[in-house]
Image (cartoon, rainbow, N blue to C red; front, side, top):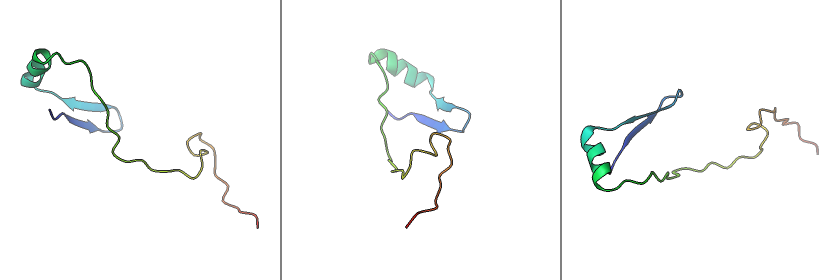
Length: 59
């Protein structure tokens, strides 16, 4: 089953029609499993913590 889900920065909008809801009830729907599509490595945890990164390198 395909769900049309959009992120707009204010939350997540999920469009579900009446036929989908009926199928959820009929198939004993128990939950959603998220799938990670892309993982981007970071070089420092400081930006995530809201701290400045000092790029002045010694040596």
